Image 1: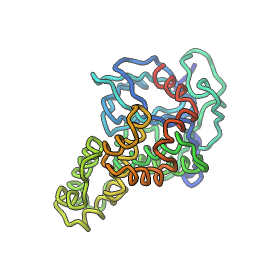
Image 2 (image 1 turned 45 degrees about the horizontal axis):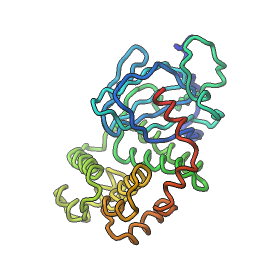
Image 3 (image 1 turned 180 degrees about the horizontal axis):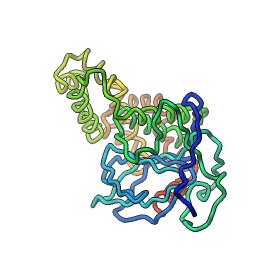
Image 4 (image 1 turned 90 degrees about the vertical axis):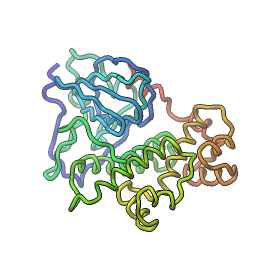
Length: 313
């Protein structure tokens, strides 16, 4: 098969992009090298913890925490988890125009590097006059506001509440816009110090969601007033500090409710909501389902086997 022609491309203004998300999920993988493969759609893999290496087009890329790799349609690649304790990845499969029909794993991934498949099975990459092609770079910085959108997308795709397709499309457009703007400089570059402080603060929030994240603490760590701290945090991270920590806490709650046998009260206390009723109210308002309903909802969702196979087979 002639892979040099991939990804297939066509001219399409950004205003006409209409991405469809085919799968979105977190994945924990042990150290090791995965088989070479290619995919029919596009995949964005963000490294949440650990380190990933990707061999593609004769080059080897190392993707660390807070970075993402773009795997284009039809381009053979081989992934490897190179961190000693494994890695946690956030992966999103998508196309740009909603034309692909994904029903089974074989509609998304193939390990057959010899056969000549139908070109109609491959997603096309749009080329807009004022934007660099997404696949022009392999590795992108995944800034906090972009990761927050990815996390929300995983939540929408997993829970599949009414209108989730529309929500996923909207979030994916936002993610693409942020990635394609990566590298753009601010007007004067004066926020670089605050940007780094906020990046580290978000990392600490991820590690310590149960800690106190008061407005006073945020302002103290940024060395600015509370009012300006909130404005600055939202400008750089995409969310004000209170909503950011709430988002992180709810994501961690989803994980704990899904992966442990802890009670709802224990999970709430672990993430910083010791009042059971308050935790239940916040969780239900944010997720559209009570915390006690999470395990059942995930059991009834589309099987995670497809994505696990895509990433690990």
